[in-house]
Amino acid sequence: MTGKKKALKALIVLAIVLAASMFFGNTLQTITTAKVEIIRATKGKLEDSIALEGSIHFSKGEEIVAKEAAGMDAVVTKVLAKEGYFVKKGDLLFTLKPTGYEEKYKTAMEEYKNAIREYAVEYASKQQLAKTSDQNDAYNEFLLANDDYFLTMLKVKTLAADLGYELPENIEDWVALDPEPVDDVVKYKKYNLKGLNNHTATALKLDENSYPGLAQKMLDAYNADKRLFNASAILKYIYKGQYGMSRIGDTLFESIKKIDELYMKMEKAEQNVIDLEEKIKSIGDVYAPRDGYITSISIKAGDSYDGIKPLYTMSLEGEHPLIRCDITGSQKPLTKGTAVSVEGLEKSVKITNISIEVGGKKYAEIALSDDNLSKLGGLTALMDKTIAVTATYKAQKATTLIPASALRSEGEDKYFVYVVRTSWGGLLSNNTMTLEKREVKVLDKSDKVVSLEDDLSYVDIADHEDRTVKDGQQVMKYVD
Image (cartoon, rainbow, N blue to C red):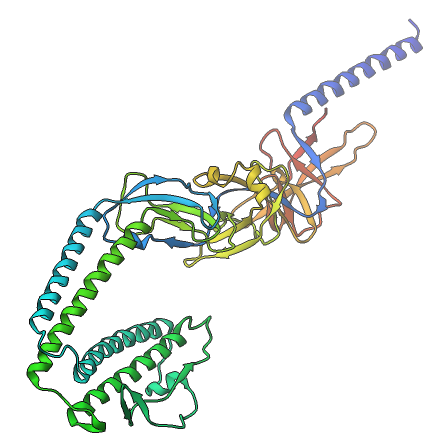
């Protein structure tokens, strides 16, 4: 073999050895070097889906009581409404049956008959005596005026206190007095009397929103005061013999007084029978007083009902149902107008209001149209159901975004990423990739994406490593 051939053969052997060395070296490096996926940050607005649980919500509403059933030992025979029903004024909702009315009616009739008999016996026994007199009439009017005055004053003072209104000290300031009357003489029966209250008045102009019904109650109190003043004055005139009026003997006065008392007792017993009959007629059916939703029912068929506790609760007039979600613990600032998807609806809707209750509870409220209610199966089907809601949070500003898996933490509020630095090798050497720790400031994050303050758009970032890595470590890129 010539020298040239020997040299060529040696070169071939050397090339084979070098190639084998490089192959096995690269294979060994591939096996022992950590692999990472190389990603690039993007710019955009962070979006996140927030799962919420909602339920149908109304305000406190109006509790409806069938007051006519009070004292009647009523029983509910039918419940025709359900929670979630929308009812119209006049719709039949319940039927009640009074169970104790027969005994009550029997007792009332007995009292009425006894009162009639007492009056008749007393009247018949005094046939030879007068049955009326100015003195007795004035006395009776004084008693009635006195009762009316104190009951009316109690009502107006109670209402004023409830509404936070301070009544003036002078009762004449409770009303708008008409101009002074031209004639101060008051005609009473056949007598012309002076010194009586001859003024007329109208109600004050109070804000009805702040003081509903108070102005009329104040006018009623003024008129009751006027009535009592005049009744007292007339009785005094009789006892003093003024204006041609005179008293009668005590025996006759007491006789007429007894007849008047029995007559009033008979009238009261008669009115009790009439009221009871009206109550019995009105207790049977319970109708909706206005349009609205039935938000709760407190009773069922067969239950006794006392006419005191609420039968049911209606939504306030014009109120529509809401889906309300507790967002007290939400890490994202959900606001009015945030898009949400509701399980059962094809199209997204929006948060219509954010409310905060006493104690700090925070709620997102979603208004429901009649069409959406229908698509969700109707309000009745939703009343006691948890409704799945997903809110779509979207940040206000565009920031640097990276996958959440690329963010690393080394303690509370301390975050970093691994930037991949590539060193380019020579002809016979490979490129090398080295991890470099880069601290970053996190603005916001979701389960999948993180928003950063830092601009990382110009660097490669390591993600999804196949083993534990550290700062300064050499890595390789995943090869598909």
